[in-house]
Length: 83
Image (cartoon, rainbow, N blue to C red):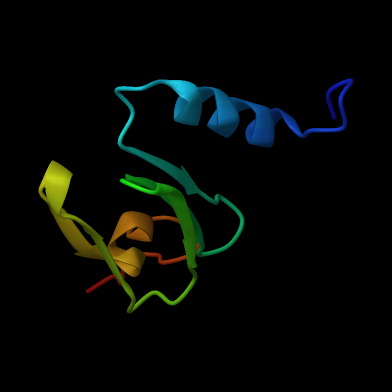
């Protein structure tokens, strides 16, 4: 925790969102399948969480469209199957 009660991760994501050129911020959890997504919209930042491996992460501005589980392929959360 930082002095103002924020976690290091919360402080860092706020810092990224403060940059005018920043369009999206992703936090990909390491201990569980979960992605926090913040996207800048005309009315401000919109946050969402994706925890279903079959959910779709869609960031068309960056050309990214994939299932959440694909980001974890080959990790301890989604090990590759041996033939």
